[in-house]
Image 1 (cartoon, rainbow, N blue to C red):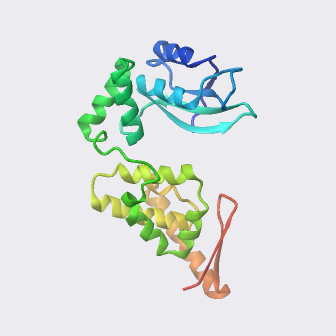
Image 2: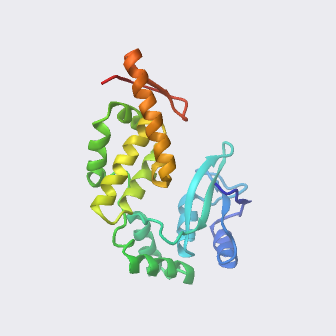
Image 3: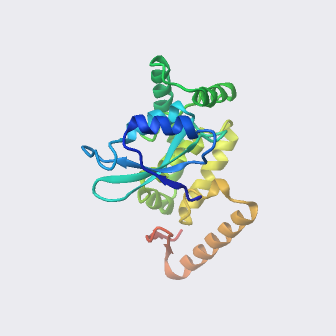
Length: 234
């Protein structure tokens, strides 16, 4: 992941002004955000930052805690094919009514409306009804199910959003199979970016693990998250 310059602004108004001046020339920033009740070194909250970002065609990404008063979150221009959430669609509609949307923000909306991403906006990780096929596939594999339970909310959301972006049922079914296999191998979000060579290595690793299980009676795998996944051998 590309390292971004750090940015600290005093408040939401200053963030809006920074975006107005830098939207077209910045690749993104790691923005300092205030925890609840904090005013120094910034009073900028996540909600305020996200709203202003959407106005200018930007989007928020991963975050990390700095100290007891602040944390940092990535903000970058929205990628051409990035998935929209229904929450952000609602925020954009609200800000359009308030007269806050800027040219870059409207352009991002128009592009999403033109190619269907706006209409396919995903409701979020809480609506599992839209992901029942994924849930069922994961539950069918004890190893994948245990690995899934250990994922952070952000990792699950990434998988949800990537699935929501697929346009065909065949593509969705294939991606679900890849995610289940990735969970079994301790690589839950890597499958969508895998090359054929990478997938071949994954299958080889799984075959080795399954062969080992015949001797030991269990499959034991150390994942990159530091967990051990165990399941009875079939």
